[in-house]
Image 1 (cartoon, rainbow, N blue to C red):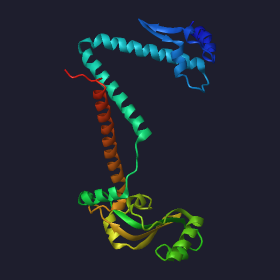
Image 2: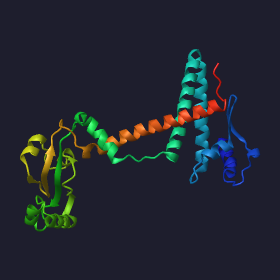
Image 3: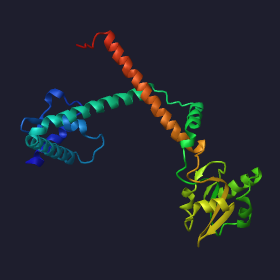
Length: 276
């Protein structure tokens, strides 16, 4: 009987001119009613099995209403508390969505570099590295790659011509490489890729300029131009994005507070607010 009903309902789902006045009830539970339009509103544009979707939608709706009804009956003594929580959640959700809409529409996300630098200068003594960082290079090549002797010389060189030749070599033969040796990086992100993990990173960084490791298939080159040990002051370059996020969040809070104040003052002027 249920399948027959579904088969009768399905043709209505694909009518492009489905009139609201012809909406029909397809399920009910006590005084709650489910209409065909409710299914249509939730149905994806592209769907392979409409009959299954309708049947599942109805079953899920009935089960949900069944649980809500039993919850209301069995939680009757505390129902006011739950209604208050639901209302608070609804209000918070509406306010949040409205705030996001305002931010998406009008909010300027620009944070000046000078603001970031000023924040860093103010809090730099409290900004400590949680991990070891370094400036350098990391290259992985197949042990059968040509001219490894050339790579042995190039990977530690800071000459411009050598850097260009190194990049050209890596583009042709490297499995993986990082050559931006003036950019701070967490050492652990490269350490985890080595054949054997370096357990004492601090000692390694202090005592190594350039080195390579091997396994059966690959050779791993590391060049260390500069380093800083965890617990030391974190450089601005490492903290820049984090500081920007902090400043942007503060700017958002200030912007939304200003909008709220404007709405409040406008409501007062228009005498929509009455305080007794």
